[in-house]
Image (cartoon, rainbow, N blue to C red; front, side):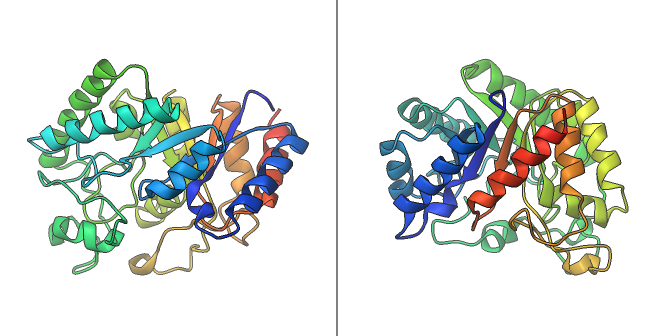
Length: 303
């Protein structure tokens, strides 16, 4: 198990009992013989970052951290993105971070305000709403617009800019994450994301929703991602949504791994491990040491 890295989300430590919680996770990780770290969530605050750094916890990033804007590599002018990237790289040097995922593809030239810091996801994303990109009129959830000319143009722009990101800051393993399919976010399907020829992070809740909205098989589409050879990171969590959930209200997950669901997460984890994925992030906001036990069990069964 030593070749796997299993992170938990920093949001778990927004509690007065954070010292005890960190100790409980570390005890469980030691007992299981796994490498455990924490991924700083993209709306994290300075206090929690300082707490984790002070306790010498191995950290990874979910960029942008402590920034005004999300990163939209599909925009015509991305000078604000480069400013944010440079700020994050300086922060990473202080914290010892060498791996970071991010959302980076929106069907817009706008910069998107960073989540948290006083604004919700919906408030930040609302200025990007375009009814012609939606599956249902007036509903933010995406239709499949990945064959339209604008999307293909922006996909080329994203690819070019991501390779420039890698060239400028090769000391960081960057990974672009599958988006929640709403408000014209463009990182959705394996064919398009593999085309970027860039490290990828699959978010299980986001991709579970994408497959349901577009009537795709979750596990078959996951394997398409993995066959591309670019998947470096997994955001793992359970979703209570299933085939009976109306598409117009299908939502994200972030539930503990033992939550009853129809995703077949053990199969998903084992498939990822067999394709060589070694970094799993439990992006669960009320996680417990039991989540470490479950993923360790699934990874052992993958051998």
